[in-house]
Image 1 (tube, rainbow, N blue to C red):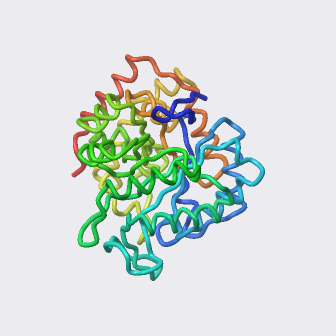
Image 2: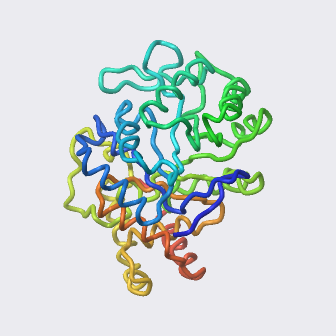
Length: 329
């Protein structure tokens, strides 16, 4: 497994991290088997993954609770990443979405952040969080300036309750505001070989300002594993229904591209998903790929990608192939 530094901190994370959105279950992912999920987390730790990413909104606390149980007795081995800013305890904040009968607001008020952190610490059964992300930027009508949020996060860092400050789903302008108010150690953007939008401005900015990236959806919710063939029917209400690449006409093109890399999977003795993940973490500016999984076998397969180092010419060939796909219809 390869390990990389978070910003200018002394925190080292594995190039493959475990994302636990699906472990939270709920309306997007269906029921979760807690025992199976804990076994999956343990398997990841045993094979070299040291970064676990979660959030209060994943299953409305369920994901954090399961992660907390899994880390009992192993907390010192783990870089624990969670989030703040999606709030459903009361009406503070600006409406974002509704789920499981709860109205979820974006709230980056210092007072709600402090409350969230205390709740997360209890769920996670720990007294500190390694990396705390703001889940989404603040929006109107109940807008909180980044400077106020950063003042709160910096104070939490001084108290030892968090070790690194991060922001998810932000723009370059957002990052500039964060840096004007303090130290931004990392961001968490969406990125995959099918969604390379951050390469234009965000990644170059991060590279030049020593900001790490924990990228999510590197396998496009499983599409880039090659396991979702043309006969797969997405269950009604599942999150994958919202993704254009899963639509039949687009899925067919992706599957054909993956099949075209059979010689590469033979050369590197790997699965297609391992090849895709290795390509992802082989891109300049990518610190770690958050690979979501809730089954032991999938975690172990993803972890193996952290040992693969692709040749530059193979990385370029794969980039050329995905660029040929263009945008989904």
